[in-house]
Image 1 (cartoon, rainbow, N blue to C red):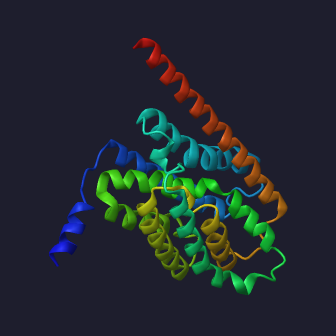
Image 2: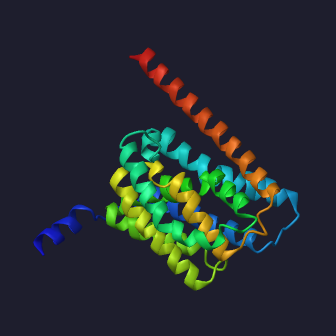
Image 3: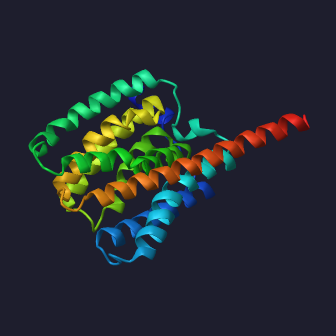
Length: 252
């Protein structure tokens, strides 16, 4: 019992800061955007689909803001987001184990004619794994420790799916994120979850929750363009970091 108590103490804390508040605000924005998009309130409206949700939500809110804050503002580097090659062997091993766990859920859909589109959609959807683990998890761990981060990340993902998925699906999704959070806390490496687990697990969840009909090739292309914009944004941030380091070196 004493060892368990020590383990809990060593991996728990409470340090609510302005950064924590910003994290919560982005979560609420994610919930609003996710809900509006999934309910088709602005279906066919290019300003919403491409501008507000596509660029503003998927690219900026989920990827660029977290990267700017962690890499440039906090100076933690991309490793602060879990984007690193450290422990990559362990990360990929855990990813295969997690993917194997969810693969059994994917088996009933293997003959679905839209499964290739769904798999490509999730392969290209780095924005969501980035928002959940590179952003929410890494900020929660600084405020509440590993145990708090695992629990709060699972609750957060469940929260922004409220109104978009049935309760049973949300509860199971939270369980999956809880398990993923434990694995991510071991490696601090995003390759624990992407690409292997994300492709298998998310495809299983998508097919069970939505089916494949809504995932046409246009949606896959949209995700591809979005990923390209995300990579360009991350590249600009990386160049900015290089320039800052060069200036600091010159000023020494």
